Image 1 (cartoon, rainbow, N blue to C red):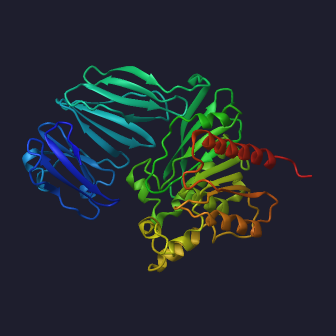
Image 2: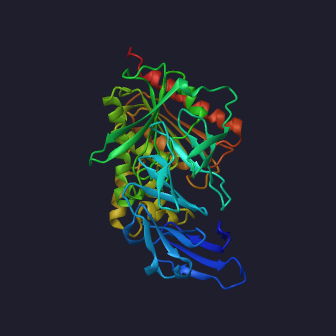
Image 3: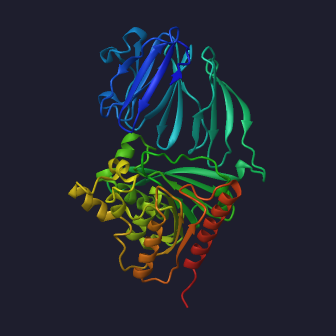
Amino acid sequence: MSAARSGKWIVISTNDHDTSENWIIPGVDPEASPMCVARREKGLMYELSHGGDRFVIRTNADGATDFKLMTVADEAVGDRSAWREHVPYRAGHYITGAICFAGHLVWTERVNANIVIAIEDKAGERHQIATDEDAYTLSLDGSYEFETTELRYSYQSPTTPRQWFSYDMQDRTRHLLKMQDVPSGHDPEHYRTKRLMAKAPDGELVPITLLWHRDTPEGQPAPMLLYGYGSYGISIDPTFSTRNLSLVDRGWVYAIAHIRGGSEKGWNWFLGGRGEHKTNTFTDFIACADHLIEQGWTDAGRIVADGRSAGGMLMGAITNMRPELFAGVVAVVPFVDVLNTMSDDSLPLTPPEWPEWGNPLVDEKAYDRIAGYSPYDQIAAKPYPAVFAIGGLTDPRVTYWEPAKWIAKLRDYSVSDNPLLLRINMEAGHGGASGRFKALDEAALIHAFAIWAEARDRQPEA
């Protein structure tokens, strides 16, 4: 339950992954019976913002997979036939939220792995907040006032720590309020970021974000840490992280593969890597690695792949599919025993996961599909790269025996002499080591493995 920013309505919202329902109460009569705006309907998602004299509705109605904005007068909000399109649906422009001010409408879109903030005034004139870099992320922050032209937002990129701005929507000027402090010091001018597009096997273009030090020559292959996730519609945004700088300062290139299964290119980007389309997630990641090699950023055998949780499943799949690409693979709390876990309905988190992967207990096609990519089940006799798996003893999402079984079977089947390492954190769950310094210790351990694995892979054979 929340109050509309205009103060005229109280909104009660409920939703799951595929449905939503909203009820409203007049702000002047908080004891009135709630009125339902639109009944729950499978596949229909919608949310409300109030602009003083109208509702703005973000919805995926009528096939608007990446959502659109509609408007309706207060008195007609409960009549869906009265909703009118205001910002039309555009494939690949994923509208992630909308906020109403007295004189402006503001909404955010995710386009090609970047966030766009769009603003419209009462006269209908629209503009976007300008940015300078290829890869970045914007977010709306604060702005709790309704009768104001001031918008609060933040900007960050792989090179630039988070900055908070006050933006005047009327005269389109901004004022820096605060910048993230990096105690050890940081100069954004020492770093470079870039956006590339890799072609997937089916022709889709997969965004890649790169970060490197300005002293690392472009066009000369460098060691690379390639990160990927690709599940649940979660977008891996190109944010700032001091942890990545540790490798970059050593001449490494840090890369993010914005693969299907996430929502970096819209909700269809998620659906294109879900369920029956799950293998697109894996082939997208491999396409990114191949593209980076072809473009001269790195070499086969100099890439260390990194993923966690469902991204750990990605790590297991790509290790089975193209082991020669990677010097090493880091898999943190990896979901690698997919078929067995999705077949065990005694695990409390298994049934809620069936919409994402399929239910192998009742669906023969889902069984065959999952068996065809489940990392544990697809292990075969081949020269696997060095692998470092990390599990958590008390992890309720990915049980500790998944990485343990996976590493044990890899050791039985691998025909290379590359080490296959397992570390079970006896004091951690799914989130890894708790506490700022223990988390940094774990990050340092992963980087140490990456540096060691890449150097080891380049050593000439005796």
